[in-house]
Image (cartoon, rainbow, N blue to C red; front, top):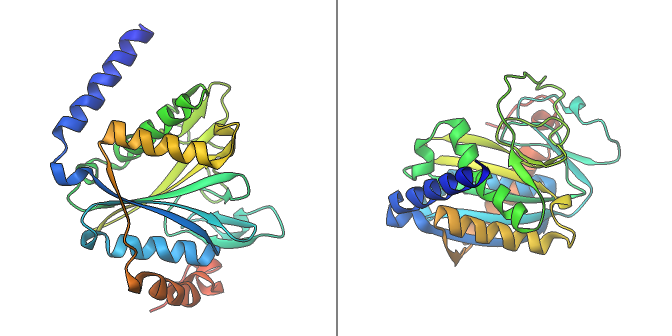
Length: 256
């Protein structure tokens, strides 16, 4: 039965790839550096805002230049229980993520892409199945968390403590990867986090495995992302006006 399941999964992914329009396979890869929590969130917001202009999916890998935690759009800042960190409210949902032992990536999917036609749970699954298989290629047992109908308190949700449906779970029950999304008429912003426990060799093997998995299962064909001149300049302004402010992080009030 296990082999039958794997065969069925393989057939499903081949079907997905064959049915993808040709222009949906273009993926602009941005191996970004280490930035402030505020700038990281501002960059992601602007990537979503300009998603239709890029001509494909954008996949961004990035790091955090100071000890940081991000928390979900609907959470109070008090959901973060550890001290001594710089905190930032994400534009996406989900729970608290401490960024001292994770790999973070962003997937921006423009409107009109087949993944945007899926409902929220199916779109999570479409992204997390390749992440799961990437982790398995690194030698870890993994599966997607089932939907058991459990309700989590969003106000106190801790991302790597409370798995949600379609998160990636290790064979011992420990959560290895999760994500949160924001949907607009421009597309989908998927912000993902993968525990460094997914590999015994640090970040680079995880990045390589994820890239291969997205290419193999979603048909991504990579090109370097030509970062527009305006993007980082506008992101720095947005970081100051919004993501670095108490109005946003404490009161959830966006600037006009």
